[in-house]
Amino acid sequence: MKQLLDFLPLVIFFAVYKFYDIYAATGVLIAATAIQLVITYLIYKHIEKMHLATFAMVTVFGSLTLFFHDDAFIKWKVSIVYALFAIGLIASQIMGKSALKSMLGKEMKVDDRIWAQVTWYWVGFFVLCSFANIYIAFNLPLETWVNFKVFGLTALTLINTVITVVYLYKNMQDDNSQPTDNQ
Image 1 (cartoon, rainbow, N blue to C red):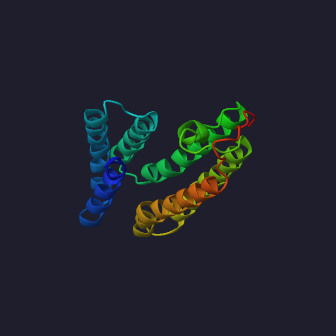
Image 2 (image 1 turned 45 degrees about the vertical axis):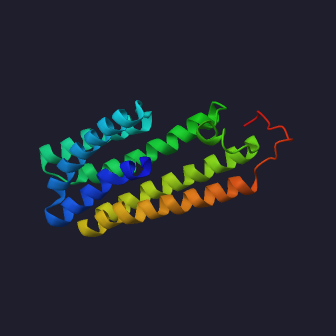
């Protein structure tokens, strides 16, 4: 249910874009993301920081897109979000606290060296997606960018999630071994 709720604004954005235009889709994306927050809170009694950050970015860049009637803002949002994810992972790694370990460490007991490898893998992924988005957004037709944003980035993220889970699972420690605390 939660994953469906996470993708709902993106699906609605795509549908509205196909029937109307980027500006109608952007307005609906802002509204759908706000509704997503409300529904998430009503169901789970908690809103994750990532959802709040996403809502803030969608609202700011979406509003700029609508106000200036310039789709460049909503296109930049995608790259900025991915860049911020990369920066957040780098910062957590530098501070000696793997953000990925804090999210998944209870379910997957692996050595801190593995968490560091996975973190840097995702940093690279986010940077690559950020630059790919910039290239596609500003060098290819809008239709191509929308399809890339909705299907390409979603598929790439799902594929990388599967790769990560398989890698973590392969490197899981048994219950008798002691995980290390070093990053």
